[in-house]
Length: 226
Ligand code: CTP
Ligand code: CA
Image (cartoon, rainbow, N blue to C red; front, side, top):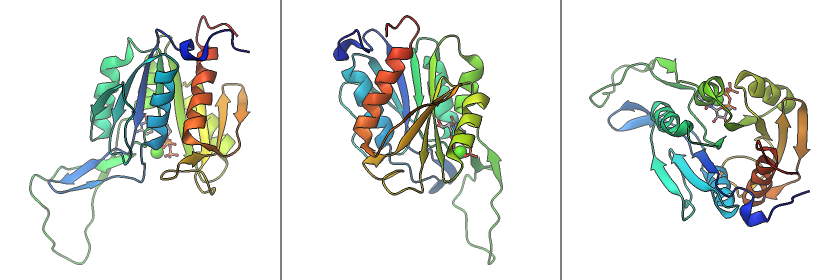
């Protein structure tokens, strides 16, 4: 039950959303990236704005139009995303980590364009920093929402990530399902908190998922009535 106006559910709150796929540079003209479109993150930012929040998006590579009336910070790599998120973390009330952060990046940065040589090329990769895990360790009351994109055992992996990264909520989606995943305009999600599943929604537009998710977060913020 909501005792507040929808347009005021997040009034006075600062929401930071990460969106898109990070790009990890190989050489001056090439990088490693992923299929993220940024649509889910942008929808969340728009929904938070409509609920009255002050919104910042830290975006890596995206293929969608960002919402109006939000601060947009453009980044490339996981490392840059970490820096931009950390520098805003203290003043933030809700962080939503919708970005698809590369897990690995080239271990060596090549200053010059790589030339073709033999028949194979071995590229050494190293782990990127885990942004959400870092926030989970440093949080001082911020409400943390993570994502878990899986192709099997959704509940198991989502709960494991929630605990490991000290999240308040985790949005799980099975990306092998029709209607869920990166490039479409719909998603099928299950939401978990530390106790287990709190919601399981049918196929919805990313916009509807975003609205419901932000209402759920608003109800769970410290001091919220409901
Ligand atoms: N995440 C992050 N920094 C990373 C990797 C992931 O902040 N270097 C965040 C994502 O933004 C997402 C959550 O962690 O909110 C889960 O991402 P996911 O890729 O599903 O989990 P991983 O921990 O990377 O595990 P794996 O890819 O092996 O399933
Ligand atoms: Ca990952």
